Length: 272
Image 1 (cartoon, rainbow, N blue to C red):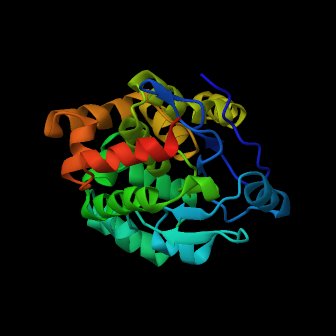
Image 2 (cartoon, rainbow, N blue to C red; image 1 turned 90 degrees about the vertical axis):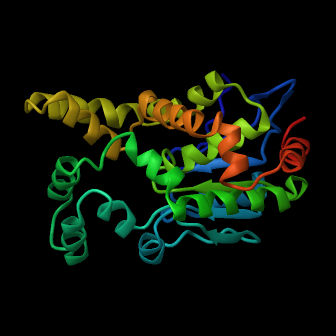
C-alpha cells in the first residue's frame, strides 16, 4: 500500500489515489484527491492544493444545508461543484420522520441527536445503501463520473469531498477505483486508511466511552459518526451491488449510465 496521505493542516483525511494498481496499469499520481470538508482550509492548505496539485475542480458531496452554512474555502482557479448525495430529509425520513422535526428545530445538542439517530437505526451499513441507491445519490454519483470523463487531468487535479472524507467520498473512491480496474483488496485498504489518519482521536474516544460502560454496538456507532470506518460497512455495500447488479461495474453501468467506452476513457485519462 502506497503512502498517499496529503498533509493539510485544516483539511481532514486527505489523500490521493495515485500509485494504486489498476489492472496492468497504475493510477496516475497527483490527479485524484479525496478529503474531508474544505470549509476550514487555511492559507497553507489552499497554497498546497493550488501550487502543488493545481486543483482545477472541487466536488462537494455534502448536504446543501451544510454547504450553505460552511462553504468551501476558495482555491484560485478551481471550480466548485455541489453534488449532494443525500439531504437530511432523505436521511431521517427513511428511518423516523419525527426526527426531522427535531433536527429542523435546532434545539438539541449533538449527543442527544446521536442517541436519537442510533435508536432509530440510522447509523450503520444501511446508510451506504441509501447513498448508493437513493435517487439523489445516484444522480450525484452519475454526475461525479460525467465530470471525471470531461475533466483533463493534464491541467491539474480533481478533488472530491464530503464532511469527514470517509463515507460519501469513500463510496465515490470505491466506484472510481473499480472502474479504473483496481482490485478490491486495494480499495478496502484505501477505505480503511481513514482509521489510520484518525487513530489518535478514535482510540481516545473509544477508551473514554468504554470506561462509562457504553455497549459495544453503540460504541461502534459513535466511532462511526466521529470519524471512523468499518470494513463490514463497505463490504455490505459491495455485496449489495453485486447481488443486485452482478458486480460493482454492473451498478456503474446500469444506474450511473457509464458505458464501456466511458470506462476505457477513464482508464486512459487516469492510469498509466
